[in-house]
Amino acid sequence: MRILLDECVNPRVRQAFPDHQVLTVAEANWRTLPDAKLTAHAQGQFDVFVTIDKGFEFEINLKKLTFGIVIVHVKRNRIEYYEPIFLALLDAVQRVRPGDVIHVTAPEV
Image (tube, rainbow, N blue to C red; front, side):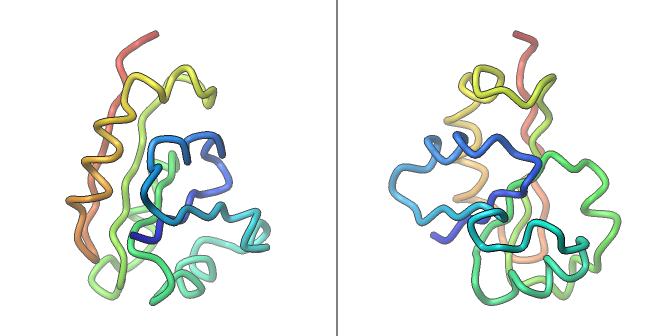
């Protein structure tokens, strides 16, 4: 599975997906792209987009997406806030379908 991590996601979250291809927006050199252009670039190249941008799903037409979106709800963008939900994140990226959104919420740390 090809996973794209948004620039707002701690890049060490890639540890949650050891058997998948993970690229960050920064590594793809898409850091300054607005969401609409980022989405267009990701079409056909990724299976899942992981973000903490809670408004992302309302900014784009989900029906046209060739990838699924996982929106992570963490109190702070530090790896220790993601680690308790690594299994839930892995499950979400494996279940999400193109044009769908799955929310994963971390417990308070």
